[in-house]
Length: 334
Image 1 (cartoon, rainbow, N blue to C red):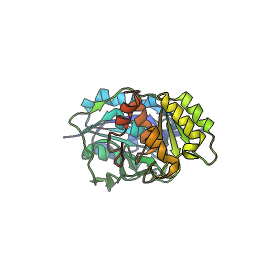
Image 2: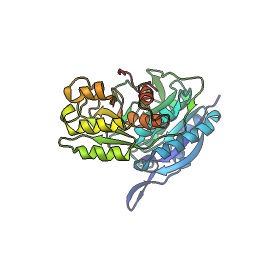
Image 3: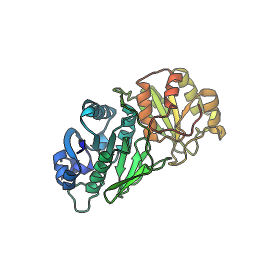
Image 4: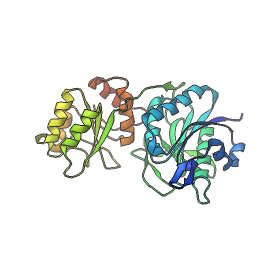
């Protein structure tokens, strides 16, 4: 039986046209399909244009728009392909993993490093590969399909700014590859009999990337503006001067006020462990700071937004954060 796939178009480089000010999204979904005529033999495709954005302009409100579009049409299709800009695709993939949980149907994000109309584009192959995964159905849930790799939505990260193999799977193996038009699955994520949809996020989550000599005043400002702040620290995690410094005092005082503070690492692989060094030990053992462990920054950001929309109680929020969703966190201790 012919599969029915909905292509949800949001813009990005894949749909970009050249303007006097540089590339900007302009092509519609039907325009994209015209460049990949092989899709006619693969499945029946419907197009839905929900956004037309450079993904730099993507916000949590847009994530909700995409999730709602899929939810309203979920029963009508066998799978979904979301065309998206590469720069924030990993954030959107993570967000959709929390907004649409346990989906037995594939929800595939893809895009391109070059517009689809160019001679040397990767967009045609990526789009065809994404539909191949969506039609196959053996890898359910939210994934990123790019450069031949199938990556779990909560584990994807853009690691190359120009190369066609732009995305990597962080702290988790790739789910499979698409080779010569065929899906070769390595792992099959767990899925439910029916998806669970969520329709709210709290966007007041901020990120502070530590650099040598960073001012504690930066952290104070972000905490005033946000309900949760992620500190992207060095190595396995910690703050300058440990429990004897100004960062520690600011964290302690704001946790007492009910603010949420989580620590992750700038190092791409292997995750955090605040217990290792004195600069991080008491953050976890005495103050109760949350930490990312093996979660990506993209997943941590989206999960905090999702969790804060469910509860503002720190103990309940911590439970949500440390409850794995789509294999987003594996090596942790509460």
